[in-house]
Length: 86
Image 1: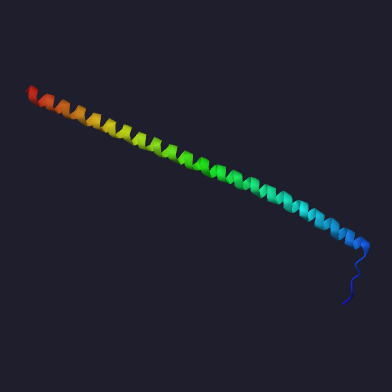
Image 2: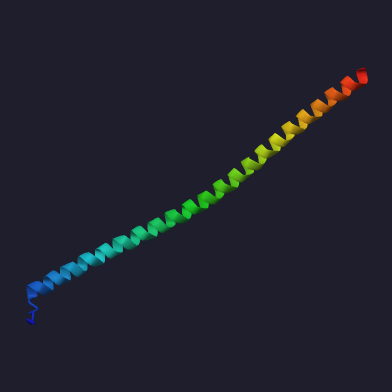
């Protein structure tokens, strides 16, 4: 196995690579922090939309129940009126 010499040029290149890697790591850390914040914001927004959707769904169900109740009442009223008129 050959012994490698650590020349000034090689050390300078290594130092430059370490500096570039440090900068890249810092940028990645900032990007991860930003994505984490966005993810938390989207999760909160999703919860709020889910609450709204549930409320709209429940209101729609109440409207459907009311409509069926009114139809049933109208039908019963019509039948009772027809029976008592004879």
